[in-house]
Image (cartoon, rainbow, N blue to C red; front, side):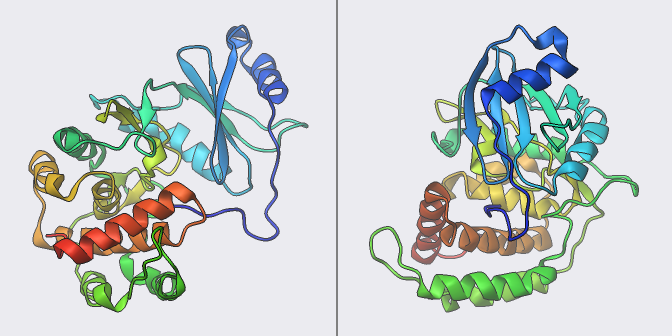
Length: 301
């Protein structure tokens, strides 16, 4: 989810010359590819190279273990996936000029759900894709940073972000009272986790979901992959589709127990409030829109 570097975190600048040098030094067979458009995130940079690849480069400390885990596990986990996925094909090592691990992955054409939102008709495609992702994870699988923690572990964060929301002003001067949905959050926190750990994406940010004219076109970035609760991924997906499409999503996903639905609501609320208090303009607007929609239309289920 959204969040900039914390105090004391190392931050590095990456220009096109550095990208070219890394590729030239470690993957000479790709050095003739043109360095193209860059996409800046809170903790990393994605740079397109040629027509078929992109380079994912962390710009802050703390992501090396995640990149190593995704490169170790994703080829095996994704072997039977039928949807487009940015599974890394090359793993880069730190150098004297760049201190982090990095990766080269396939480029997924189109836009992303942060720019071109998903339409209702494509919700089943996203639901079917996440069903493939959520296969059983072995005991040796790394836990997801986001979905690997039970909701109860987020109590302090919930109180912090709802306190910020209470003082916040929305895009049109509106305000929200978190008390309107705090009871639903508490119900979700108390819900039993009725599944063994599953592989999860871990942080299904709108900018990581590829779209083609509003149709689901794949998932780009995967270094948050890990074992966890599938409810976290589904909640993030629900923020990307119209409320009217949630039933179609779950029909395609299948096997959604009452407990899973309750946990989805909790993760949804946490992510929506975090978006609504984000410094990222798009996430901020999305969070406010979804929370107001929740109050207007009633509960998620």
